[in-house]
Length: 255
Image (cartoon, rainbow, N blue to C red; front, top):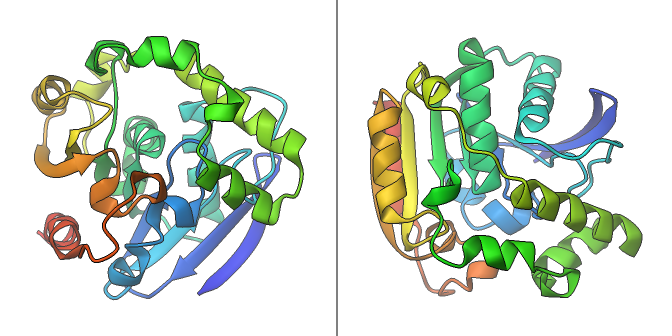
């Protein structure tokens, strides 16, 4: 594994590179880090791919900037890092909020991405289950998963920075705006949508998205949000294998 920092759009951005082969970018979820989102599957994906893993604005080891975090700015930061690494085109795998960033990359930088995997993505407010937005509006820092807090404080031992990151993540979701239909319809890259049976996005929503995005495949997994990827807060079975999701991802990317 190679790790490093690079100043991208005014902030020092942390990244890790695993394996070799065609580049696949991994974009973590909101409030998370590389390892909390993808630690379970990196060893498998890196057997056949060069993984470009990164931490977004205010998250993990990456610096913050004054403005609020947005999916659009995250997309620009990812592209900035790829330009620094001299990677002209890559496949993109984003989880949860990272999947929204992956979709923004497909919209804003079509010539920089080959294929997009959007895992547990929510693209419209009405796609969330009943009570989700009320929960977001009433959420508190105390409710932030301990695993996320520990992962952040392991590298940035500053509780004020942690609270600031939490607030920015919460504000982004409270003020979440629907992705535009026309922009989704104009996505050029093939998109694989992964979703769990009990996910943030309802089955009706994720199915509707397959009718908007021109070239789309959909795969449904049992369990809850991120469980099929081994995401740290999903409490996956320690004996669970990831062969099916890995083969699903690889088959999509290779065909």
